[in-house]
Length: 117
Image 1: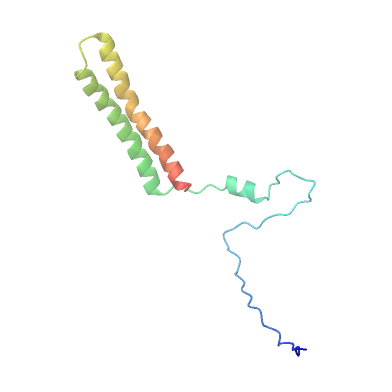
Image 2 (image 1 turned 30 degrees about the vertical axis):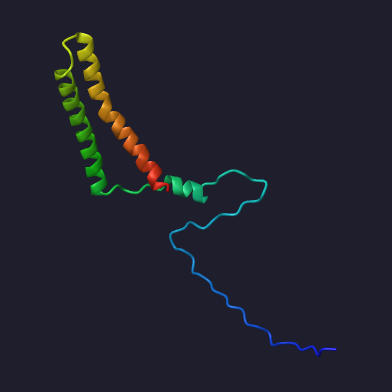
């Protein structure tokens, strides 16, 4: 029969992190209550508004001006190269006005999808 021996207890390593100061602490509610109160993190997060920086304001203004200028230039050039029928001219002007708006909308959608990555 083999002799049994008991080894010394091993120490366990325990690490702890300090809480992140910018996170709203969660509120606990009884399990029967599903309503969202005023002090809950969802309400605090949704009502917190950050002031846009000057760069954000400038970029929004620039994008609006660039889109309008592109609409005008596209409409002018598309009409200049369209056949001399009124329907062709109207269709080319309409397409020249809509194309920059479509590009702006698709770029915003792509940016939103990219930022959620």
